[in-house]
Length: 632
Image 1: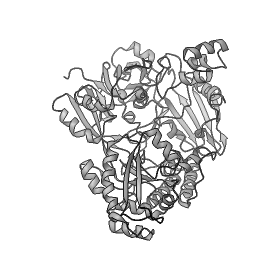
Image 2 (image 1 turned 90 degrees about the vertical axis):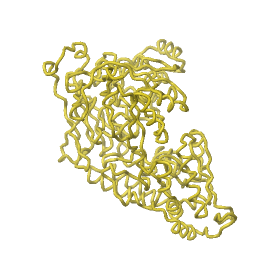
Image 3 (image 1 turned 30 degrees about the horizontal axis):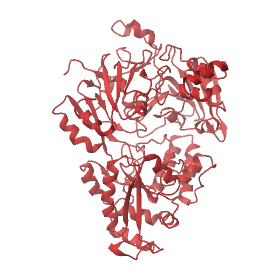
Image 4 (image 1 turned 180 degrees about the horizontal axis):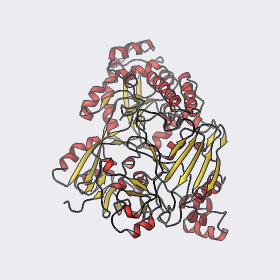
């Protein structure tokens, strides 16, 4: 369980969304389960995680079968650990945290976290999963200057002090911080989690502290890397599971090394979850990832060449996919995306052009651009009216949602936009009714995209007309993601288009870091974000009072000890961000097509779809999906 010794005032405090206790799974009594499964019993921890499928409204399945999926390239093998979503702790569909790989967690004052492992848990190789895997990762990887040149990651540092790590016994670990770390467990539950453990028995052969120099040189040459450091990094990479020999705790383990046109994943015989009848999960034996071009994946999905498909499908593909249901044994469902906005605009407050930088830093410019947009037209034209028009903020599914945040400067009001632009000193107009900048140039804004979304371009084409109606010219420039990001960092991008908040359904116990300038890929303030992420070594310190205030509020959230304190910080940040319009939302609540073969059962009809916090399909446990071979 997760227990707290401060009146339960920590991570799982009282919230609008129901929270489940992080309880220890009881030892399995073989007599309690029907059937004879000696082979599976050998692969289970003594206290596996028991999934109550009927309690989730799902059907008890059966093992076996192969599921095909389509991917756009080799890097998409990363989808399997994201879908599998085996983590120390995980988010449930109701956004509560619960133990998964762990049997229980004890939390004291948000500073001391004691992790309890499951007895008899094993890696996919059959090697025991114990405290040694954490000890190795802490001592020999995280605190090894050759592997982590910058030292431990910031997630393990509080008030400038690295956490204190202790091995209590073979199944108990403890991390103690100098200050509250309320986002420690959420970081462990992320799609790309904070790495605290690695398969030590396997990886020691690639580490200079355990292997001799000649062996390491031979292995490095075999893997075509320069030294043992790069060798260890390559062989330990779990985020992109390209090493079939690397043991895993995920539901499926890789069997194919790149390059390949088809990647095979097979069920992990030591996976730690069982259904309520005692059958070990995952139900599905094999997952095949077939490489195809993004241009034809929709067509292939519509003709039944995929048994389970989400990426790279989009809502514009829905009519074609829905028609395909009548011709092929497919099921098409719509899940609601967790993004704060399906498409958002980001005025670059770090723009190198001094004129546009000055304009974008004036809140009247950002507000004018926002109220000039006719969101109702965008919703009807591109989302069939099924989305929700509003700002880029949290969604109604979040306990932090307020109508005021969604409506802030999101009304279509060209008259107000014109007044704000006049106040800015842009009252003079030139040819075509386009306003003139203080330097006499026409007020033409270049909006750049990563060139990966047709929806973004469709939205921009509508916004171009909305802007022209208030005297602003909008020019669209498509690019490539890496070039686009580089230009933004260099201050060459005036206005960017991207999706809105990645996680539009946060709880107070999830970090509000995305609301403040904290990362270099934040398109509205890339230099300020880089400055924070680099600890002040690069980028530029924010000099806009409201941006500085967001960082201050983030610090208050990080130092909190109760959910109530964290909720208060969240609301102050959300209110400030909504009023200042640092990103301009259009339509949220967009729908994501999920297509699966009629034979694949237990796929939810309705769900939330997003990278965070649901790990795409992960929070809905694809290990519980199964094949009904009796259905055509």
